[in-house]
Image 1 (cartoon, rainbow, N blue to C red):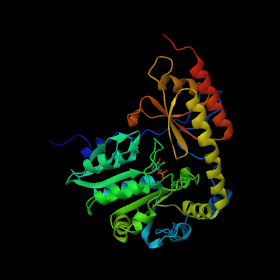
Image 2 (image 1 turned 90 degrees about the vertical axis):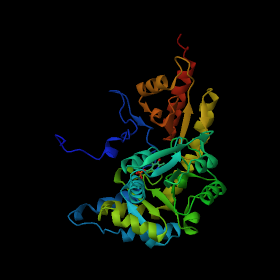
Image 3 (image 1 turned 180 degrees about the vertical axis):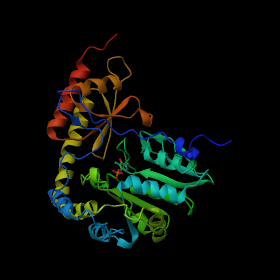
Image 4 (image 1 turned 135 degrees about the vertical axis):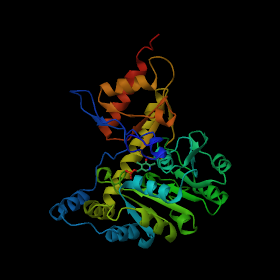
Length: 369
Ligand SMILES: *Cc1c(COP(=O)(O)O)cnc(C)c1O
């Protein structure tokens, strides 16, 4: 029978759309958006100036291969620019990977509380999302390997993961890689790599360099503070980068994003300041919130997953409403299967003090019968 209107592929309608963090406060209340892991320091002033300088050339197409930016990334991270591809955020990179490697009926694997974009990307390609259980809110290499089937095409691992903030040490990532067939692509999503200060952590650069089936995704949205511009990149084997270049839009990264990205990479002092801020306020917030009797998952990112009790008057939903009334917007993570949790982004010093004060009031209120 002929349909009465155009029909998207069934896989498209199978997608549960991503719901971004809230960004509104009640009328008359100052908004503190702590729901999207944005940096309280903003981008480098040099990146803003470089962005503004592109304003008088907007009639020109950007360099479709973002050569200048790939070279700057290559210099900053010691990588071959020929093995880098840039995208409109790492979301685009993750979607390109899924579209290049996952077809109808193929499986894409990720861990239980893994970043939700993976599920959307896999589903949209007609693929089957397969989920491996976690342990202690951390990806479990054995569970991931046990979930591999002959139809597995791609394994997505956010390291560190959002929304949990936990990470896998390099030896665990290597063990995961060693257990995968060579035809399975391992995607290491290192959106928060710059925040991680652990000797046993490796973002993926080394594993990409020494294997043929690993690709690393990175972003300018988090520590570089350029989320609004949409800029990300991938580093991978030449054959993977070639595949992604074939399916991406020919001008997928804007000239403004290219210029701002190059300038951001050159401002090491700004990056150091963002790291130092996080090193101060992440442990402070974790300690203060845990002292209120709330469970806080140890995080190496710029955010904390906070678990609330199920007791009436103390639940995550009630905390969310309480904090929202004060303009403090955290991220509800029910869509991740974590209905008892809220995710808090490390904001400014003032914001962290406001959150701790608000949670103190929330927890000291009498629980309702
Ligand atoms: C924020 C985030 C990204 C990237 O976002 P873009 O803004 O699209 O670059 C990727 N992966 C994880 C795990 C994230 O939290």
